[in-house]
Length: 302
Ligand SMILES: Cc1ncc(C[n+]2csc(CCOP(=O)(O)OP(=O)(O)O)c2C)c(N)n1
Ligand code: SF4
Image (tube, rainbow, N blue to C red; front, side, top):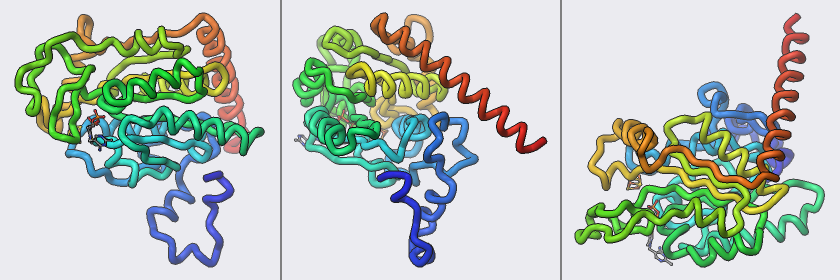
């Protein structure tokens, strides 16, 4: 979907669903510096979702969709799981892949888009649960990193298989007892951020979704690095409140507790020296764009 294609023909305007009309009129397309701060004042790229009320995955979706720099030129590749329940409500192109195959599909897609649109940047983003990313799909995930494919992999880490009732995952904490894993996990949580870095990812971030500015920065860093340098990985803690026995309002506290000093989700970023320099340049460019936009706005109101 390009920005041109989502413009509606005059004659069809009346018969399109109101949500679609609103999206064309008020969503933030074509503005590289779109942000989570636009939530509330612009049309979001997500309608109501079908997750459990208060599920942190829904918050994560909102922040990610508000942060991606070019939604009109982005294609998500999803996989089966709770995340896949959200995609039908999302106003960005997406493909549902067979469980675990998401990084293989994304590899082919990114390469095909590069051939088809050599002069246009098309961002491919994988978004899947930890069961799909780390357990059943780990081979495909890692092979895409080994091959240095230019796309971002985002894992919604809820430390189990939520959609099928609570089976054990490699990212589950040691000792945790889930509904479908009554014996308790026998070994430590797999350190996928470190594995991703060692397997060829140039930028890796691991954090909760309690702070939108942090999520936005990590997602944008990952997308920019994937465009120009190589594969990137972002792991977001999105606790399954249903499985850990929390109420719908308690997901945020759970994330805040787990990111406090000594917690297992203290924010972590791993990057190569090349990426560090590259991101400094990107930050400087963004500051310059914002300064210009501010000056332009001031000139209009003067
Ligand atoms: C090929 C295939 N294998 C297994 C399944 C069954 N299945 C559906 S969802 C799921 C678990 C999803 O867990 P995760 O990726 O962690 O996502 P979550 O639901 O926790 O967000 C499984 C095993 C399937 N649909 N397709
Ligand atoms: S089962 Fe868990 S992860 Fe899935 S929607 Fe409900 S709270 Fe979210």
